[in-house]
Length: 101
Image 1 (tube, rainbow, N blue to C red):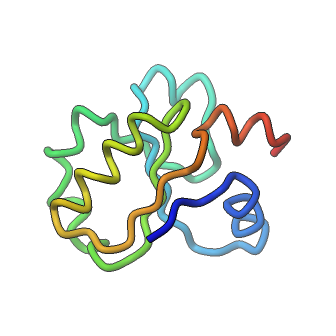
Image 2 (cartoon, rainbow, N blue to C red):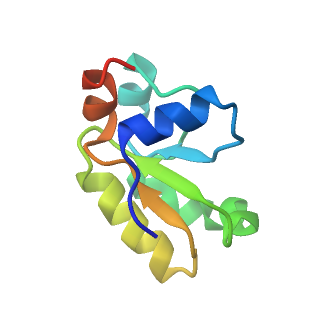
């Protein structure tokens, strides 16, 4: 699955789609600012949360971090674990903010 742009994500949020958004930044980063409805699962805790996410294996999951690096790692990891529809937010939270959203 291809990655998602901040504009596409925002449009889908505005359409009130039921999205699964995972913020893989550290908790303190998430607390400083977040994308609406994103759940915080820091990258280093992702392996411990696989059971909690198991029901989402075939559903779209959007992952993001500050700039896209950690979420690219999260996407690769989840894909290796059998998740079939993981998308990375291009440019991360910084790009989302820069887009004026």
